[in-house]
Image (cartoon, rainbow, N blue to C red; front, side):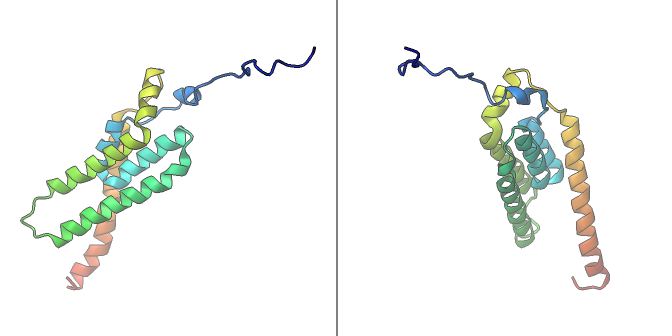
Length: 155
């Protein structure tokens, strides 16, 4: 009678997949919104992508970048198409809200679990610095593209 009981519950160690991730700091959802406000949805996508990689879900970063680029392009296209009398703040609010809700949808439950387990979090100052770097990069890109057009009176 050395045969194993077929009705016995299998013995397996039940672990939470986020337990190992508590040592890896994550950016808060508000930090994604802050970076988006200061540096466009591209900065928010960068932070969200870093969080996804830290959670072991790096394969989802391409979709996040695609959505962020789409939000950015749509808002920029609308800003160029609409008359100057239309205020710019709705575009900023739409970008921040879009990236915040994307972050909430992608990593919201994981963030709750991470903080409940005492996981480390990056400072919002770090997110602000990353957002400013993205903002400066976009400003430099616009300057490099627009300055020759203005100097040669093409626009």
